[in-house]
Image 1 (cartoon, rainbow, N blue to C red):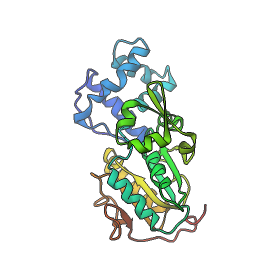
Image 2 (image 1 turned 90 degrees about the vertical axis):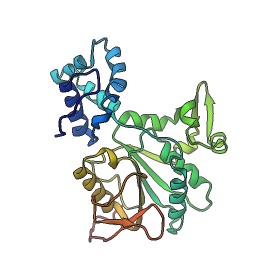
Image 3 (image 1 turned 45 degrees about the vertical axis):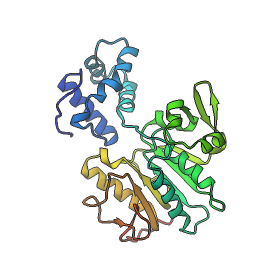
Image 4 (image 1 turned 90 degrees about the horizontal axis):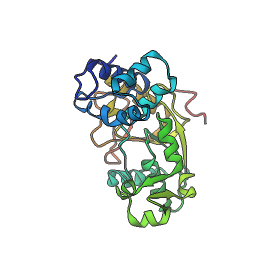
Length: 280
């Protein structure tokens, strides 16, 4: 169970701790003590939608069990889904270059915690600029709503302007009112799946590369180790792992080490015999 945290929200301290426990139990993500203000931003629209007086009343309904779907809606709203196109563009392009050197025509790539899909779509666009490589990209997120958004490929003007080069925007997106919609060809280059990174087995195997960027940061240390084990178990020998700029395997796992070949990436340090590993 998460430790009790001090509220910086309109919700009572008890309500904040119930929400923190619910989010961690369902997804492994923690609400940092200095970021409980996000609770108001995330949940007040649901409070208004249900014509309730407060977040405390909203949580009371969850505890009473009168609306089973409400807990799912609350968890989706509380998830940190910060993402953008070509976030840390140098890391994206460098990873694509590294994967290209693996000499695999159809490299299998897993984007874990993909949120609304900008990262895997960025990868698909970057690979499309390279002749001779047709990656099999699997993108997953714990949020069904986020995966639905990603499959729709619809983004606001603000989202499109965050990191997406104009050349790629004009090639792959069309404007529809105030939104921009990705071409079906681009969206279909990615397989989208709901997946709980801390509870579910890897979505297939083996993978040549795994992107798990800015996800571990929000997890408890024990869950970070579990996630890194899941990733290690589904990587090919010589496979690559890319984490967020502020994340590391140091102190979390002894199964990865910084790559000597590719800056900013990690490679396996050892490989256990696993007869299931080679199964498709």
